[in-house]
Image (tube, rainbow, N blue to C red; front, side, top):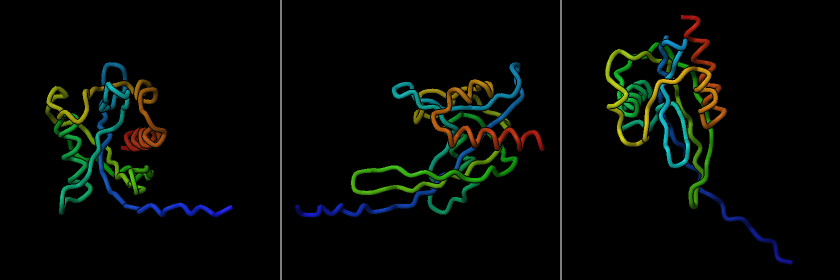
Length: 148
C-alpha cells in the first residue's frame, strides 16, 4: 500500500493588538464587546497593525474603530496566541492586549466590521465571549484594574 505524504502547509505568523475597555457602571464593572449577529461571535476589539504602527498604536486605533470610543491605555495585559487554517496555509497569530479606559466617543460610532459594540457586565462578558483565551484576557484585565 503506497504511503501518502501530506502536503506541507505554509506557516504564516501574524500580529494583532486590541484592548479591554473597562468602566464602573450601574451593574458593577463593565467591558466593551464587539459582536457579529450572523455567527454569534463576541470578542474584545482588536486588529492588525498598519505598516510602521506599534502594537500600542494599533490597539488604540482598532478599539476606536471597532467600538466608536476614544480610549487611553492603562497597562499591557500580555498576549494570547492561537492558530487557524486557511487554504494552503496555517496562520499562527499573536495578539497583544491592553487594559483601557474610555475618554469619549460613543458606541454608535463603531465601524461595520462588527454588527454591534456594547457595554456588558463582567458576568455577561464571561458568558458571551466566544473563546476561552478571551476569558483569560478578561481575568487579566480585572486583576490589573483591581491593582490600579
